[in-house]
Image (cartoon, rainbow, N blue to C red; front, side):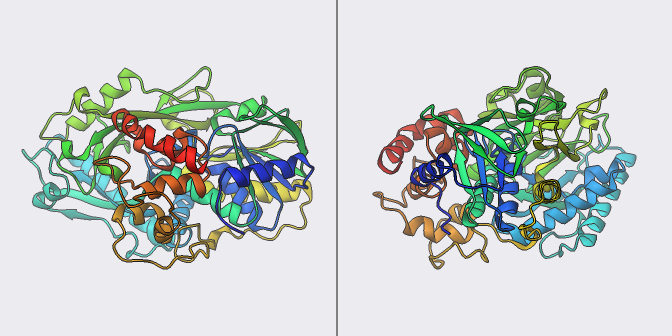
Length: 511
């Protein structure tokens, strides 16, 4: 089964469903959880369709810190179960599912005079506990090195903008970092398609019951009904729109975007304790496209759920004030070249700060029969998918389903996935390999556009072949799909403006 998602495949899959194609599972929601459920179901041999009213990774799944956390924070709060699961799932991603998309990120805590002895001891103890978690999860040190103390000189080499007055070295640990969260969602969805899933973006679901849902093609306005043996709601912060009996408490997490030059092009994530907090930090993380993401906040976000959340001025001030406590330079709003905010779909447990609300997930069957998965975190998407599929198999008697396969299933782009048919070639841009892994050569080989190796704009390390591949293989149907999700050029408004015409050119030719 080919992995390519495109307009032609979407049209064929929609037509098949409208004509009454049989389904075992309908998944509502095209974020990381929904894509993970579709992959789990398809790889068990079930007939599955995923529907998403916008694009893949349109919601929370593209607004994360791009971290695959090992669960250290949850260990510190006494939640050993979620900490251990996070460490296990991180290891699965880094060694089996997506070694091309998740790599070790150096996490640097500078030891400055403002950091007292107790704080230093707690951070060091936390890092040692993280090493224990990594070992018990079976992740080798060759993938995630052990933590250690480093010299002041080494700190400055890793993070040149750090405050050097009174610097007493630093504590260095490692966690998992995604090249990009939206790319992970796309890879999971394409792997589901490789196993036979129908992946349908710009298709809205309504009126769902346990065995039936109405679908509306957002591009044509046409509607039809489909039936399935199980309907699974994985709509994230919008889950209550599918099942009004659910109660969620969204929490907003905001990040600021900087040019890496503004911080001296660091190679480690500067990790700054939040004053007055235990086990909460602000991270300044080196990212693709020569950027730094500074995050993140944890604020209540009551009221209607916006399609695209916006950072508040208070959050911007908080992030700048916190990072400046550890810098020898001063960042201000003039240095911010972009910003984004996402809403965590937390389970409503009543009063208290959202920062203290559990990141665990729950699987709930509504009175209508819809099976919903709520809460959770990106790192555990595979485990969450397995959990909800196991429940659906049990509740709906899906006896044809095999056991879960995803623990050892390589995603599209991983070296062991059979979808990469073009052998590796020399001279490929490093940024292309980081984003596509073993598929990088295929991206170039499949291109039919003029000047496939040229950048889409001066100073942006995304090549024209990537825009074509987004349309022909990754399901991009409009400009936003290309510039905001298949690539992350759109996080910087000035860069977005420069490439819009190029994206329109590729849609007109290949869409």
